[in-house]
Figure 1 (tube, rainbow, N blue to C red):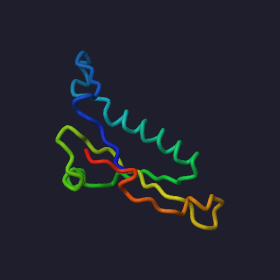
Figure 2: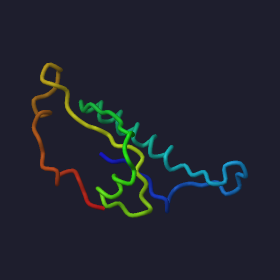
Figure 3: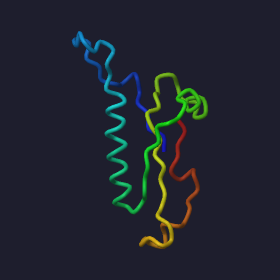
Figure 4: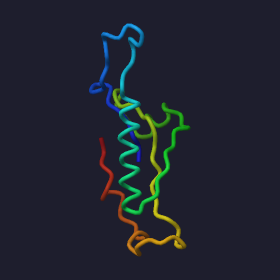
Length: 102
């Protein structure tokens, strides 16, 4: 899962003289990703955040518009067979069921 923020919608504080170029995009995206991670864990899906990537390559690979800024990726998966999980956790669904194109 790729977590981004939209530069057209991000909060800024033009009145702040110290952080004149500040926007809340990365912080807000991180909060949203954390919420998604907690929800996934409640559903039995393990998660891990990934940030050590080349942003330009991610933008190019996902063909993101210039206003979408990648913040992190979330790796999602079910626990191994030794872990306690429902049998349906190991069934795979087609990618088209849960991915949409921007």
